[in-house]
Length: 124
Image: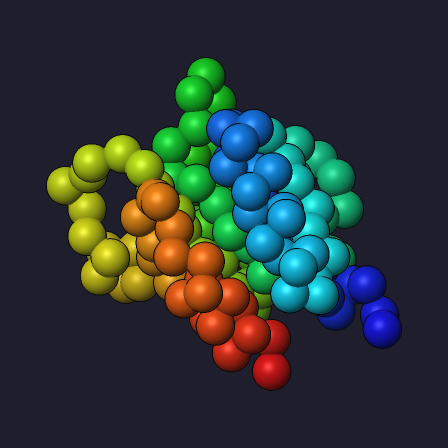
C-alpha cells in the first residue's frame, strides 16, 4: 500500500487529541502524521503527501488557525479534503466551515465512527 495515499495529517495543539486521533486512524489502516500546529505541518512535506487533513480550529499561541489553514489549502488550489474539528464554543456553525471549503466539521469529543466514515468516503 502506498503510504502517501493513506496518510492523514492530524493538526491539533492538544497532545491527547493528536494521540487519540493517531490511534483511531491507525486502527482503521491509515498512516497518521501528527503536527502540533499548522505552521509545522506546512513547514514539512505534509501537504504533498496527505490524503486528508484533520485540523483543530483554535490552537493556543499559534499564528495560523485551522480556518486559516483551510483557506491556505483552498487558495493553493489543492483538492486535499480538510476536516475541521473544535472543542471550543463558537458563533460559527458547521455551515460556515463547509461554505469555506471544509469537507467536514466535528465538535469534540469527536464521534470516531462518523469521522472514519467520512475519511473513508473522501479517500475513495
